[in-house]
Length: 114
Length: 112
Image (cartoon, each protein chain N blue to C red):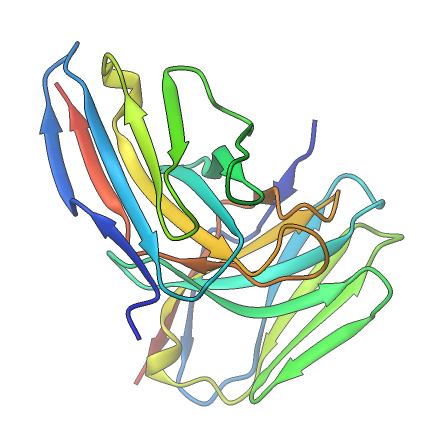
């Protein structure tokens, strides 16, 4: 089973460029999440989608947009990349967003903005 | 503002030793507390989830406890092995919507 798949694994951007990080899960989960991980700060929630057709802001949404394309896919878009967005980005999914559900994570996208 | 603290940031132990990792959180009104493992260059793997009504959860050599009144959780690893070397992160869920607040982790090295 693939679980949660993220593409690309690595990306280098110049300031002002745009890009979309892709995430897909094959576990028929309803909820999906985007986190960023920075040294010394732990993971922080950017956006989440409790179910297909819904999206909500997390702790650090500024500079990002998301699309829940269908039940399987949840993409994260940087419209105009900034050096402060250099980070490792993780996508995660869970069966539901309510109740005590475990999260399943992808292997991450390492993004550098120069 | 929610804060989750993990001390120490790094820990080295000889193989076979029992060890405890600590996690502190500021708000006792949590929905659940979760422990994850992260290997270098990899994503997170869920280890244990303790619901607010529970005091502990066990999986194999791992035991996690939760004390809401003191704002603390511990992860106990018995008979540590080199394969346990990884970063361990705790995260609290205050609302039940899986909007987790993570600690910065404890990097564990088990020396053969």
